[in-house]
Image (tube, rainbow, N blue to C red; front, side, top):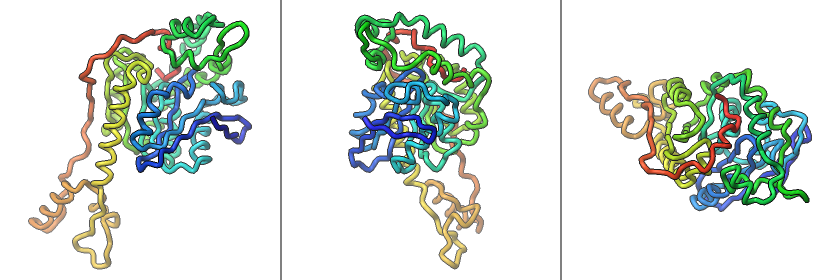
Length: 342
């Protein structure tokens, strides 16, 4: 594991694996009280597809600085941007769960030059949620720490990936975060919403929601209403930790989304203006912008027949898909309070 230091002196622990493939890079962002090891199942799958995969422990979590002075949303977004810049990563796919998804959402809105695609898992811009700090505090206080064994920790937390995020002391296993730091991380969510950020995002976006998760269907519907090209998929049998409850279904949804987005990008080719005499291409005309080849052919045919380019090419339609496969019951509902905006 490697580290880099932010401008405010916070050390961020990260893992960067590059198989040397041609697929674009992916940045993985875990949720509240989590750690980069939550992505252990997804990482090798993405590497096998040729993606460079970067994952990190958010400030205040895991092997990163345990008690940084700044736990604001701005600091979280700045860390993700700084990591991509530090590693000289070309525009990347951001994949974030819960609070990590909100960080990804804000990064896509505020640093679009760093982002190619956005994938959110049980994360969105809704809010505020005044009761969230109390809910999170109650949840943390319910942990019977120290855990005598990792088996007992897994039984309580619901996933082996979470027990692997603990550290061993003489008296047992403890979380790698402090209660006050975790509460500071979600304080702003009790008073703010992030719809303006959502409206500023322009990259292709996929939202994955657990059938038994904490994200309200109404929030996903509003996200689609404001950005109709957003794709939404509900993963059956999954709770808030969709990536842990049904990792294979999550991977398949991600892979299909990225393949479709890449196909659309390849189909969006420059087109010379039919009346240009200086070699001008499509971008020089507000009418002849990059469009899929099928639409381009329709435009050319219409232009030949009428002498003017056609403007009938439709825009992307709203997509809402439910996972057709069955799924296992969520191991535990104890981790439903991960800090995503409600």
